[in-house]
Length: 348
Image (cartoon, rainbow, N blue to C red; front, side, top):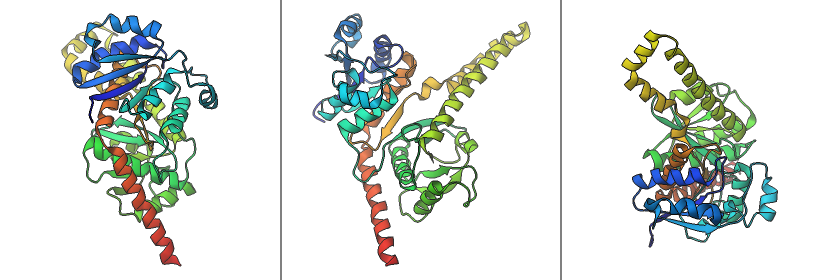
């Protein structure tokens, strides 16, 4: 790159608005000294917020976008009438080459639609998917799709596996990640036609992955494989259930530790271990889903993320911008296509 790495930010997306974005930037610039940021949104709101933070001077540019996408806006409406919105400007900034990655906490459906329209899909990929990093007993696992595609064919699931394998390679540094398809059982005869068909294709492929067949829901938290592949309907429910469970356990633990004098004393004695547990259970630490399969990098933060959560998503965006993931996705998808063509020729 001839310029510093630049992040394009939808400053008006999310539930809390631009104040959270600016607070998150103050955390992010401490960890990333050679990264610049472009904020898109209403200058009347953004300029005073940025001006009050001397540390952001020279690192942050504000570009005016008068409109904003609400959580209730339909993707089709945004595509037709959303060209003045901060979300549209954020994606267009990457399209025009002014930034290396885009991030928004706004409407997921609208963000995917605008991203697909503005950036296009990688040749050979049927549909983009949203990938997240999931904490496990062994470390971390990538799960996709978690919301972009309610239904998925066998071809789409194969694409998700290719993109997940590439993600694990560039983010975790794994030469041959283990991959499994989420199913209702590990037996080969279990599941619908889509998952069984995808499994058959992956078993016969020569991709740089170790395909492990089917995995079940509890295998995600166990860290049984590096990449878990599923449709967006199932993946989103699993993600929201895990986040809710983490909050429930945290609430139970806080209540138990305040129940008596002895429990409070025990909490003081075990404060170090409890802080470690709190960090592991905090969903904000893993905030940020990556839109894979686009001709550009887009990261989606949770709409309700606070400054800590949005800063975590910014870290993810910067890591993704530094990794040439799309080149690996293109190569591996081409390999699958060639293998399928060769198989059909052999049958003839």
